[in-house]
Length: 245
Length: 206
Image (cartoon, rainbow over all chains, first blue to last red; front, top):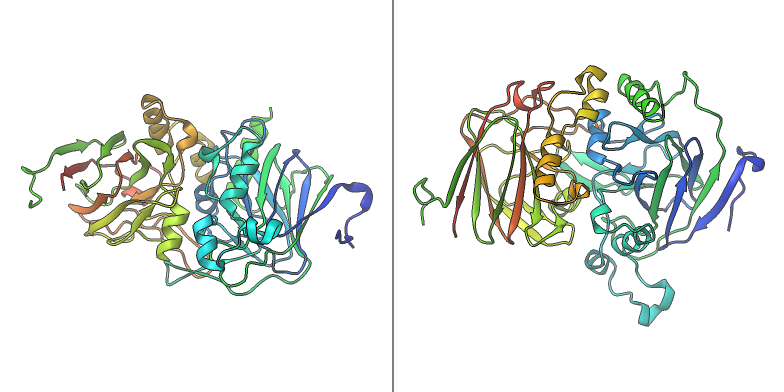
């Protein structure tokens, strides 16, 4: 069910959809538009791969993204870099308080079975236990893309902590219900999402609904928060401007 | 068979700043020697018979629960197979997070006038072109001998290397593995002590 947005005027909304637990979704987000992604009950977990829609050889690069910002974690103001020194998406809002993960990657059928047990189509029909690998291969295939395009993914709404400088652990905490992240496309971006449990989650296979709301945003000005978040971001936005010159 | 230079089936010095690739057959062991210390060796791995199967940083890190590569680390592929296992390591803390440098990322990290300096990505694209692979085969690599710890608040930076002259790391192939290296030419940070140097590649049969 679509939840109404208290702080978003309905005239601006281009698309408002619920991605049910287990499902995959994709969309080309046009340059300048924003996508609000809401975890309805706070228990969502979404994996994302994204690309320059006009040249999918230019892909999200998680290594450059953490290296260029000197941080493995994310918050409002930080950006997601392509491997060509440009910004694909900016985090223009984050009410989850930093629930992102760029380290753990995606699930596959072996891991889903190991963590949640057997849940095949024959026995439980459309509630069967889908993995990220299945979801991404199917959704990327629709754009003529495949395994080679399966890049190291971003995960939204879960956080993986790094302890003692190197050990990784899935945080057991979750964002509050109805919290959201907002991403602004800094070029036309093909965004592919898989709504399955985080790859390090175990127990009951019960992915929860997320809502995606696409809307027309105000144009980016020179005093933009994300553009001026760091010197690196300023230079990256210049690279984007040069790309569109 | 003991691992001496005489018993090696391949022994090659790779100059500073250049690409290198070689197929290490299942059962063979590759040793990478940091000849002068503090050199970053950006390394990728592919199934030699199917390049769409490649090293996965995410899977390797998650399965072992640590961001560092060292003895005992299994290098996991995107198809969930073990490609290689690290069997010896006299250095420790090899990086899985920082990826490789590029002309474009250098413009963001440092300044726009750094764009025309040599980079690992150029090395990779050149070698991938020569091998008639697909540029989309590139992914997050391992940086042998490069040190990038992550602090509790997520802060990370490439810090001074801990690799000494002659440090080495050895890995045994669990499948026929194409190893693709850029012997890092970065001059803007301490990943190679601001002084790129050669490394030695030595391979032994099982």
